[in-house]
Image (tube, rainbow, N blue to C red; front, top):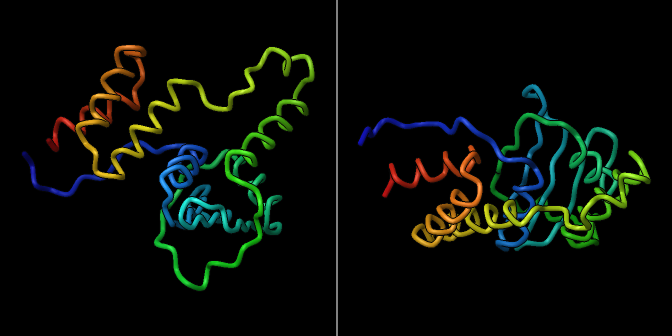
Length: 170
C-alpha cells in the first residue's frame, strides 16, 4: 500500500454533511464555499443546529440560503467556544423539510403532488447511515451496508469510491 498522503477527489452535498453531523450527534462548523470564497457557515453542536450565518444575515434565513445555494465545497472545522451563539431554534430535519417543501411549492404546485414527502431517497439514507458508521469507526458494518447499496444501485459512483477506499484501507 502506498503511504503517500492522498486527498479525496469527491465531495458530499451540504445536506449530506448536515444529516451526518445531526444524526451522528457531532459538533462541527461547516464553512460553505463557492469558488474558494466563503459564502457562510453553519454550526452544529452535539447534533443540534446552533447557528447559521451568510453574507446577507443569520439564523434560519441564512441556513435556507446556504442549503439552496449551488456551492462547490464544504469545509469541516472544529467547533470553538466562541461560536456557540444560538440563532436557529428548529431541528435539522424539520428545517430542511420546510426549505425543500417551500422550494417545491415555488417551482410548481403541480409538481408538488408528484413529489415524495421524503427529502432523501431510501438509498441516500443508507449511504448517509454508512457514512455515520465510518465516523463512528464501524468500518465492517459500513462496508456491509455499502455493498448492499452497490447491489441495489451498481452505477452509484459515490458508493464505488467509498468501497474502493475501504478496500484500500482494510
